Length: 456
Ligand SMILES: [Cu+2]
Image (tube, rainbow, N blue to C red; front, top):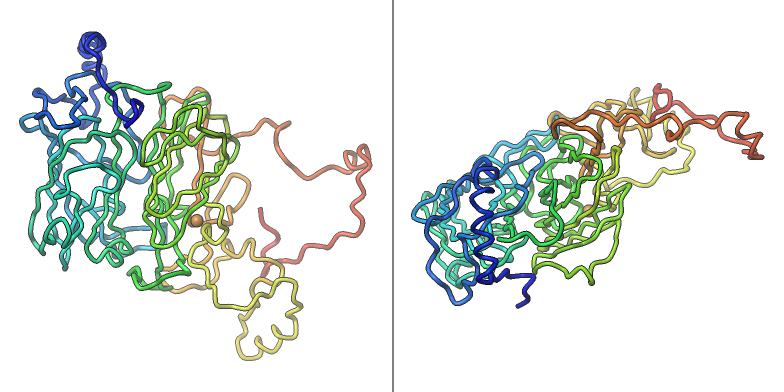
């Protein structure tokens, strides 16, 4: 047990914190975060955190999502989680029948403060039993949520009560531990953020929460397939695939934290952020001491783990994505031969005789296919990407944009970044090539992609 994980209030600092509390209470009023507990919860063996002490944190921002509301009853934060089927638009053009919590997948983020006593009612509106496991949280055994081991399953229509005190702070998750293969593949998962009772380290300006998951959605279908063990064809941040992912917006110089959690079935995701180096500052086991943090540009988020990264924001539109290239594609077919570099003219000619619209895919790469609007089954998004400032962004899946600007008045999507001309990559001029002695030799002439002249 380290002092960085659990903040012990010394008597002197408690007085100071109480004084600061009054000033802060007025300022820190935030939706769902108004009241402080009036009564300290009953002392526990590890109840060293004084819940009457002040609070100094930045509430989380959940792209494409929100936080679970709560009310204070006798010093306990009371939540109501409802496990239920949900209609979910994973990305424009793909509407799904999923399972989730309180109308969404992932479920709303449960945001609390270290030392809080929580009572979480869970109502089961699914067609089968369920439970909730509070992943990563140290709590009494009977609250751990493993069906059969720690509790009876929550029957269809039943409401169970979970109650415990958050001794640790950090980034955690919740998910079922009954038929988890089905229920998690259908979208049942969520994140838990426990802020430290007293701030540790520099103030965070933007605190984002992203859950990573993976799905198999048959082309034209609307139900995730829980039996898939690999070849997942939809990869998501907060159950959204690009271009459905909301950007993460920050001001230049903001200190940004991104909390990543992975409850996918099989895959670990190396999440890469462009234009920055960041530090991995915490795992779901606690804070990494400053002396042990190291700079990174990619963080591997293993199945069942969370990672918090922090950086100071640089101006621009920066891609953030899983670096497994198949994880930034939407509903790509995997069971086809590779045509890259093949001369497919004879094949095309024969096929066109029976299928006039036939065109072999992929002989000169697959960039631009997404943009061409091929005929596809209804409710499917094969290879679909989204519009960008400089043309089409050929990616889907676990891809989003961190948008950083100076002088923002709000954290609404500020549109596309306008690079200064001198800082924009463009076609090199003949004068530039001559000046620098660059000879390109013979170069191929671009072929039209099915009547589409090039792409961005
Ligand atoms: Cu990945």
